[in-house]
Amino acid sequence: MGIPATGKQISFGGINLFRLGNGKVVEDWIYRDTVGMMRQLGALPALSQPKKKNRNVDLESITCSSHCEPYQPESIFRDGP
Image (tube, rainbow, N blue to C red):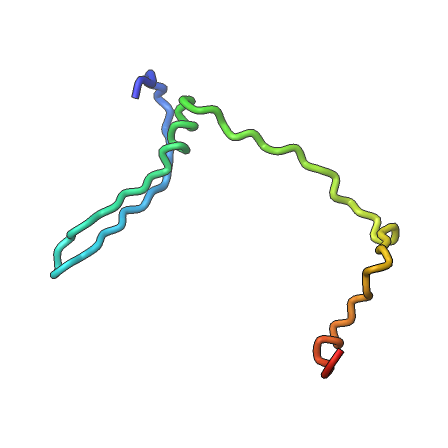
C-alpha cells in the first residue's frame, strides 16, 4: 500500500457474508472498514469533529405567525373539520 511500517496496533471491523446453495458456499462477500484502518495507520486524515453550536433556546421568546394554530392533540379524534 506504500505506507511505511508504524509498529502501531490497530483494530477495525468487517463482515463476511456467504450465500449457500446445495450445502456449499456459492458466493461470498467481504466488507471491511478499510478507511478506518487507513486512518489509524496515518495514511488518511482523521475525521474532524464539527464545532458544537449553542442550542439553548428561550422557549418563551418563540412566536408564531398568524397562520399557526395551537396544537390540540385531541382534535385528531374529532369527526369532521
